[in-house]
Structure formats: structure tokens, C-alpha cells
Length: 305
Image (cartoon, rainbow, N blue to C red):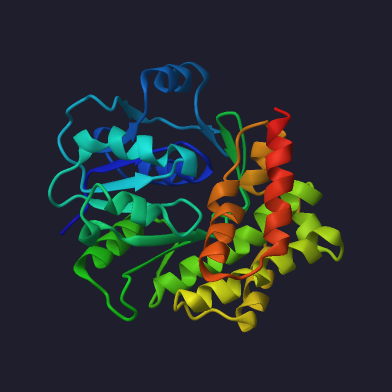
């Protein structure tokens, strides 16, 4: 199959980045940004910018019947996922593929409650150091999108189709042999860096240099490993240095999305990170005191908004 028509829902950092890349290579009518009327009005009036360049997007309301897309990309916040799944229903056909750019390890499961599991291509985006202020995105590193099948070593025609499309679009990507391990590794990273910087730091430099933020980050990451073992995911303490090296490549003045949410007084994705850790900890009878502390602190911060 060949991907020709694409719908994106969610103009956060990743949504803007991939949308801007795609818009350079696709016919305007073939790239649809799905959004409600109020958002579309705001985007048109204020503009959406990627590294100073205004994005020329084709906006589509959820109720519009445009015909199916070959690929739908979810780039919303975790709390908006259920609504996003409903909003794209008029973009879905029997062969539509689905990609989620959300952090965490559960968004594909949420998609699979409504749309065919076999049409979901598992995806992990890592290494992007973007800062989004309002509708303006700036970044130094675009990062890499890893794609793969849930069965290690299997390259399905659907994964191949997404890989070929990303290649055409000039989007940095890699086909990952064990995508579940990659997803859990990224989850471990976000549990550490997003939450520690949001509570104890200001930007990535606090995670790159010795001190409380880095210590808490690593301690929170370590708590994910026994949970991964219970879920039969092959990550261990030996994987942590890889992710610490990745952190060192980020723009020191960049900020994780959760820190940006805290500064803007928006509800964060703590439920997807510490919340998920604590849920699994309860399930398996494992203590996760660092994530419990981070969860409580982030909830306290949010209660002041």
C-alpha cells in the first residue's frame, strides 16, 4: 500500500513538527489537520509557526466527510486521546493506518478499543528538544521516530508503508526490531526527565548536570525496570546509560513538555507517567516511592492553578 492522504490531530510540538515537514512535500488538500471550530479559528487568526515559518495547513472539522485517509497521526495530549479518537472517525476507512506520537505505553491500547489493532503501527518519537509557546514551535533537534511491529523482528507491509512514507517526507525515522522495548525505554526516560525537571528544575540543563534533579530523574527511571520485568519487557539497569547519553544531546535550554505545561498552568500528563507507574506498582505489589512523591508534588502544583 502507498500512503497518499494523511490526517493529523493535535498541534502540539510533534504535531506541528511533522505537519510542517509533510506540508513541504504533500499537496495541501492531501494533508488534513483535524480540529474543532474554535481551534481552527484561532490557528487561522494567530497562525501556527515552526521555527519562525508560518505553516500553511489545510484544516478540517471532525464532522466533515472528506473521505478516508491512508494514515492518521495522533499528536494530542494524553487526556484528549478519547475525544481525538472520536474526532477522526470520518477520516477512517477499512485500510487506514494509525500512528500515535504520544508519550507513554498505553495510547495504542486506547486506539485499539475503537479501531483495528492490525492497522496500528507502533511508534516512539525521541530526541526532540522543542519548546512550544502558544502556536510557535522552535527546536534544535528534530529527533527520530522509531516504528515497528509488536512482534520482534517482524516487518509487516504496514510498517513498511509508513517507513516508505516517512522516507519520502524527509522525516528522520528508524525501523525498530523490538518496538515494545523501545516504547518502554522511552517511557522510563519520560518518567524520569519530564517529572524531575517539572518538579525540581527549569530546563534540560538541570537533568544534564549533577544535582537533585538528575538524582531524582535516575531514581524514578530505575523504578520502571521491575515493572517492565513483570510485563516481560527486556529492559534493565544496563539500558539507563543509553538514555542518559540521549539526554546529553538535548538543547540545555530546552524543556520537556510537562515542564512547559506547569509553567503555562495546564494539566500535565502525570497520570500517563507516575500515575501509570503507581497503577502497575499496585498491581504487582512493588514499591515506587520516588514516583509516588513526584505524583503527589505534581498534583499539588496542579491544584494551585
